Image (cartoon, rainbow, N blue to C red; front, side):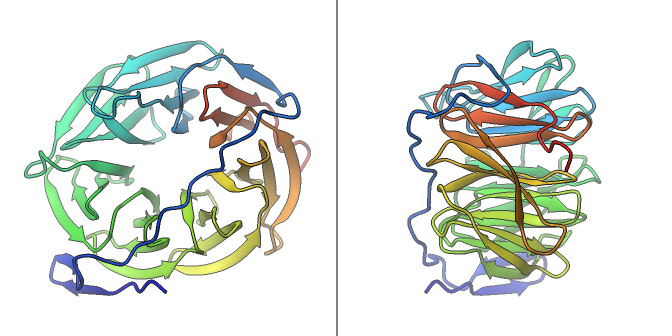
Length: 329
């Protein structure tokens, strides 16, 4: 069994053991060819997409598509409300994206991050002092404008709205994803299959095991943190203050992609090319909707304004658009 052992001193945190025990991170299934036609419509946006988000201010879907060369500049594709696409090349290689919900997307890069104005397509590169050689692998933005970045080496770096480093925390094997719930950052470490809550200063509050092979994480409008345990075939639901696992529900089909909405929680099944909507209102997840998808449905995004679910293929099959996805629920 893996053990999470943290020691917190002053304004920084470090592992008591510099080489924490890890497991082989879980991955999505290699999806078969779809047995059914995907629901809704499919936009022919090529590339092996790895992440997506929806920006409500510009009504734009932002899709991240790293190239075959991990060191080469990577593009994001902005999909407008009419389905038109605009590729934007980032300033250098990137690994993850996040948004502020107000017209700007961010991409984690080596040494810092890029900011992308979704209206103009302008890219602004920010280099973080003292981190020029750090490979950042995760990024999130707090409401106060500060950025929380995680690295391949397991560090969390917090940068204020003037881009000055305010804290660095080193308590992980690797930081694979970060979500923000209120002022709490929740970090997913796939190698330790764990989630850890950090306060505003970056200090660890609680660390919990997340199944036996957690892969993806999302925060929803109800204040919950949602985690997919791909290896264990579960949807895990956590509260944040404090970090407590509230629900665990079996999900078939090698679950992977996840996104929350005001009505349903959406989880993709990569072994069966499906996406399922779960109602959590009763305290027990109840399947309400199920749709056939494009091949390799690794990433999901949701537009609350129109009730549109986006399913993004990781194998080059494009972007699936399911309008009014929750139906009458």
